[in-house]
Every structure is written in structure tokens, then in C-alpha cells.
Image (cartoon, rainbow, N blue to C red; front, side, top):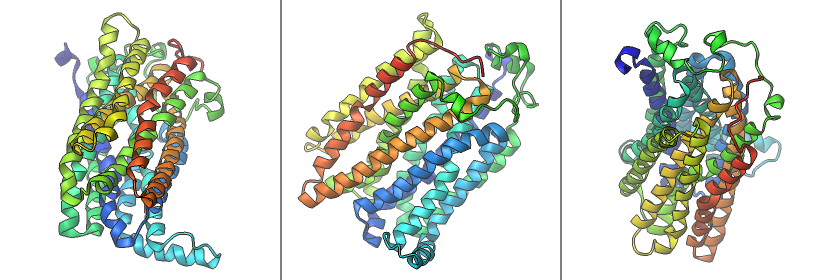
Length: 455
């Protein structure tokens, strides 16, 4: 049956997967170089928290607008513009010091001397990177909604979302080696160049399904067979009928998605940005020695992403509706991060225990994220997906900034007291319970399947 229908939609899924992999490769370079950059530029944990917070703030605010921009430009060029900007942002890190000197001179004219030259330069670079990277998920979710029927979307989302883990695996396998042989500037330049290679393939291969000549009529019909707008035909990318943020915020479904992002995005970003620093601070692991533990941990995350996209299908086959099956799967997933609570108590035995337990938590996050994103395409019309993802992205960014700043402050405070491990214990506890809190509030806001059909 599948051979008769065709499989071009999975080619699109593969392209989105590779873009997401590049997205996380570029994002991860700084965290892997942080232990060395900390020594080179004499950063404190608060300095590093400020650099990462700027990324998160820019990412969060831009997400609010970039989703609407993707809706307006369409998926093809929305994604294209995003990867151009974030690839430039990745390259700019190599010139952080001269950029910081320029910014420092400008700020000095108005009496602002809060940040060092290196911190200013990296803050600017992270802001440019975030400006582009914020477009990845709105464009990816929109591409998935355009090319997959509803019952396949969580699985497709799980596959492309596993690119976050692949990027996080490839980064520790390549970045420390590149740093030791090429230096930190060339490492940033090499990683930033990857996005332009992807862009060339994307512009050739991607068109809206209605215009895609590589797509068979049977596969096109299969993609759109269960859409609510079936009577009107396949919905086109257009500027018509855009929905305001105020209107979207009137729906409990928007708030449910936004709260889920607020509570859980920061957990993933915390582990992504702070794990190399944690392994150095508590276990003295640095440079190429960090490759294996991080590769193992993010391999677990990749498995979680794919399994999480597949899990709702079990409940759907049992007779539950798509949304009800997804929420049941998300409740099961939300239980797994609780295992992080014992990471620190057992860490004295070997560093592999917290690595593996945190790996379970990050795998659960990826499974959760694959399903959380898909709740948007479950409940909202295609034309609003980018905007709703943007609202959720803003909420997730606010949550991420909060947890990053909290972590930086706690780590400096307890480091000064001589037991930084207490700071990590507190942060791990917050990360462990976040998913159950998020699921409970989401279920309260949307207790049963409520698709929106009046937009």
C-alpha cells in the first residue's frame, strides 16, 4: 500500500531532520568550548549564564514573530531565511573579541561598563544565532503539517526532533577535536558553514504539496485525507486569513501549549548548556574526555524522541482518539524525569550514574517535545501553526532564561561555599518534577480533545 501511495513525504522529513541536526550542532559549540573559554577569558558562572540567557531571550522574543513570518513567507523561504541567519550567527562567534571591543567602546560612551569585552562579543554572537535558530521549529512543524496526515505527524515529528539529539551527539564527537587541532575560532566557522550546504538542497527539493511535482496524486490525497478543511481542498500558503496573537490567546489550547513549553523547555536547555560545565566542575572531565559520556547521553535522547513519537500510536490502536492517546503517552513520559532525583546522591559511586540517569531524563524530554509540538497541529488550523508555535516558543524561552539565570546564581553561590554540587542538586530536582506539573496544568486547561475550527 505504501509503495502505491509513495514516500516523498519522508524525504521532506529527512531534510527537516538534517536542518534540526545542524541547528543543534551550531547551538552546542559554545557549551562544549565553555570550559576552555572560561579559562581563556576568566568567565564566572554568572558570565556564562548571561551569555546563554541572551540567546534564550532573543530566541524567545523572536519566536513570537518568526512563527508569523513563516506563515507569511511559506515554509520553503521561511526555513531558508532562518538557516541563512543562524549560519551567519554561528560564523560570527569567531569574531566575538573584535565585536566585543566595538560594543564596549560604544557602551563606554554612555557610561555602561557592566560586561567584559569577551562577554559582550559572545552575547552579540549568541543573539544573532538565536535570531535565526528560532525559525527552525515553526518551519519544521509547518512542513510536517503540510506533508503528513494527522496520525503520522507525531512519528514524523519524533524523527526530525531526534535531530536535536544527533546534533548534540555529533558536537562532542567533533568540537573538542576541532578545538585542539584548529582553535576555537575555526571551530565556529566550520560549523557555521554547514547550514549553507543544506540550504542549496532544501531550495531544490521543497515545494508546497500542491505544487510539488515529485509527489504522486495518491500521496497528495493521502496527506490531506483527514483534514478538516477537506471540502475547501488543500490549504495554500497565503497571507490571507492570518489570525492575530490576541485572538489566539483567547483559546485555552494556546495557553496549554504555552505552559507546557514554559515548564519544560528550560530543562532541555539547562542540560544542553550546562552539562559540560557540570562534568568539569564536579568530576574534572574536560576536552576529548567529555565525548563519550555526552555521546551516550544524547544517543539515549535520540531514542526517546523517536519512541515518544511512536508511543501515542499504541493508545490510538487501543481505541483512543489521537489527542487522548497523545495525552496518555505524555503522562507516562512525564514520570521518567523523576529518576533524575537520585542522580546526585548516587553520583559519588561513578560519574556514569548521573550521566545515565540524566540521559533517561533527556530522552523523556525529547519524547515529550515530539508530542507537545504535535498537539498544535492536532488542534489548530494549518495557517495558524507558525504563530501558535511562536507563542509557545516565547513562553519556553522565558522559562529557559529563568532556569539559566537561577542556575548561574546558584552555582556561583555554592562554589564560593566550596560545595557546588548542592547547586546542581537543587537544579536537578526542579528539572525532575517540571513535566508532571506541566502535564497537570495542560490537562486542566484542555481536559478533552477540542479542535479549533472557527479561525
